Length: 257
Image (cartoon, rainbow, N blue to C red; front, side, top):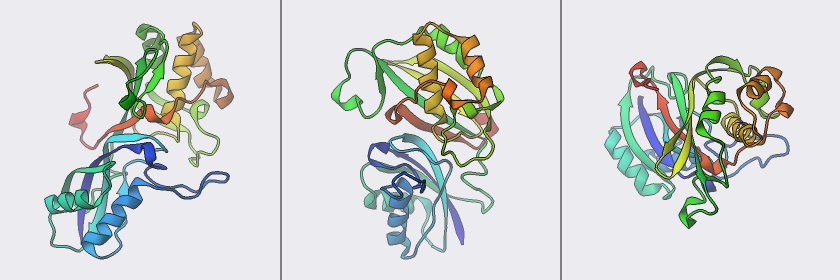
């Protein structure tokens, strides 16, 4: 049995997320990235092959650098899997790299951090091809105001105020290494790096930070929301199409924020 690492990108618009999660009141099943990859692997290997991802991106959320692993008894090498999978997968999922790794590698538990980006375009309208991939706002608070609040996102924090009521995790504590807003060509990007994230946590943070800035509020009010540990105190949840799993970090040398 050999273990292989997959690095991939996908357009999350038409997916229910990386992995379907049955929750009361939600749609129990839908099209998922994991299912598409497992279906293609089953064709190549001629047997069911479970795939484990580094993170469970939500419905409509994209990935530039999702990582997964699978085990298989095969003579195929990584480049063969990459070419074979890309020939079988739908066009909204692409395998970027595939290579054999040590059996101890685990896409989820070996990860040191996840990097998420949220893309915001400021203006009256969007180019037709941009609507699926960013969040448009008419105005955005000054970056210095947004970053004064984002600077509070550092270290181990209780994110109950930014958790969804149906989030399955018992602990709402997560460790954040870095968070900031910065300009990138024609848009503003919010980057956050953490050991792990709650369901819809990043989108809740983005929506709250923009809402506070729009109302002329700043770091003191954001600090009060964090310490309140009450989702009702936070702002709206930003839409999914602006969010990307940008990268999964497995090597300490990749920390350069």
